[in-house]
Image (cartoon, rainbow, N blue to C red; front, side, top):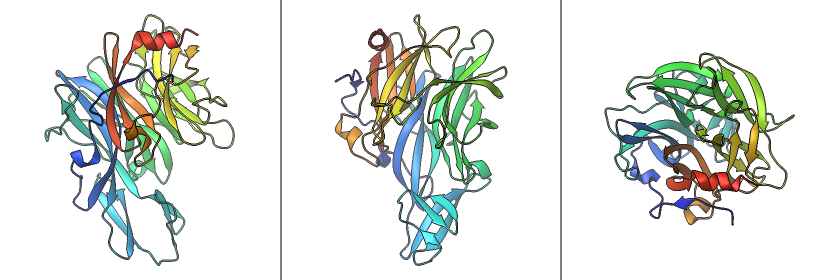
Length: 349
């Protein structure tokens, strides 16, 4: 077993019953992998909250967001011939696909990094406008000086892209719109410039030619990105044989930029691995995990809304310790610690 994660013994630390729905007509289906940050001595999580409409007999109800971030419920009769509802996650009505759940981002706070609660003075983030009508998901938080950059997945009938909102106080957010067009996700911005340039990892997808690979992009202003380079591909027979994507912002070490990423197999078993990128040119991959550093081996990681999944896009670093918050089985938020030195040691070979 290659798993070197030190799991918190009281996992999970957050489950659907620990939070209230955003709307009385909704129920929380699952909590997923949060973005993580430090602010005024506290640890904050930007948790993805997936909600489902409370159903009425004889109807199938699905939620979407309007232009102002308010939930609108669409009700379809179950016997309507235009309705195709054989998939529990995506239904089709009259040629248009709809998600059966919709996600928003909930900010929760903790003094000890274990017990988290919602503060009413800090707002939740909801989808707004036509490119976020099916929700916003999987936030990564990168702090550059005193500004927090939130990259997240924008979901709509137009496709899946990467959005950006920035804040300094977690009360007011400047929406920058879509910075990577569909189909793209898993975007993490480096927390330090390299030779005056912003860098970001992202994951465009190509189902017909190419694949779900990790790419690197550059920017002069943090908004407009170019010089894209593919730096890591899937590997046949390994834990990342079907798809892979970045976790949180890379960690700067003496050996290079350490990136913890997720990889999945054809059977949708999600594990975590590590990559080491060159300090001056992060398009150069110095080393990469041959075996995962974390696998779904705990009960709460194997069974849930979508089992056999460990997935992270957030952590805080304290010396040699990575305090990693991760999603388990697409249902719970959990905590595990890693030693940076130990991860680097696994990459020596």
